[in-house]
Image (tube, rainbow, N blue to C red):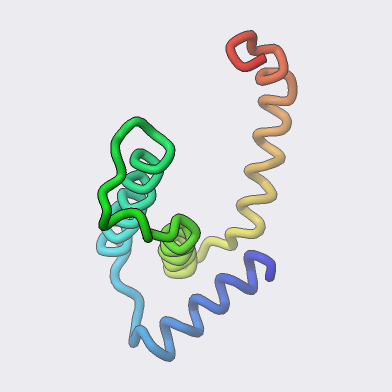
Length: 108
């Protein structure tokens, strides 16, 4: 599934099950909450914090998908074509950073 189709799936889901989009500020708060859930898993599973028993069955993929869902909601309600924006963003990064990371002694 490409990004445009994924945005349509989200839009269709909102219209069928979600009644309507939450407003942009509410979705921004929800996005922050979802990113926090990703951060909790990463910090405890891959970082130095100990993982609580209640966190051991948390699915990182599911939490990342929650983040993606809310990002697509925000894109849909603000008229952003994420597929186009992503292509432009990769082009920008490629032009700007084509040698930057290869020449960085901190990561080589």
